[in-house]
Image (cartoon, rainbow, N blue to C red; front, side, top):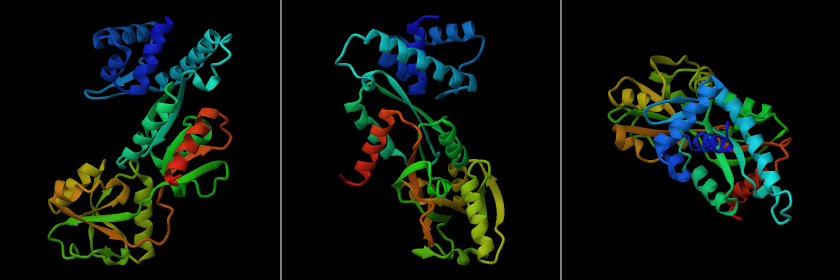
Length: 302
């Protein structure tokens, strides 16, 4: 097992792409793939789940990455142990970031790119996850930083957080729906509607919230279909199968034209559906603190 191969593995893991990793490593993609396959054969486990257009780490790959990152940091420290002007923060470090799927996270990627200008050796390991797993992963160290719904951290004093994105519930309706001309609706206005709902395991927070809001307003939600993602749900709305809930943070302004639907704001009674960036106060990594402060300052307009 060579250090070069371990570095290749880390680059593929953090880029989530053989193509991007090969470009940044200045080697051919077939050569990179061969090195990773040889590493997997040597270990006797699969490190990546390969899809046609993307890859992600297996559970074994995630465990291996943690160990490899620790080894490479120690090797880097050895190579600079007599170089007084190189601080620990300037060595290669991986920050594990978890975030919600379906949301418009362009701002997050922009901030990370700007942070890398000042800290060029930082690498981000990105992973989409459910709200509950993001909260649990931040607590147990699986993630260093997460972008999650505020409601999952309301009672946790160990979490330091800042509002990253204003977010409220919306309803998507067919363009010819009787309520489609309204600028804002109350939840009580939806008592006679039939809904296209996300499967609960895909987004338990939105499903539990809307079911609870229905009960609070005196009715049970009637579901015509359960879907796995927003695209499937809005496609069904467009052909008249019902109305679907989404968050404003998922709406990039193109959805109405893309699906030929009408999206209307629902009145909100609290801010606990906002998206926050959060870190565990017990995580003492100085680079993580620098990143959190950088994001917080940018969001505050400092």
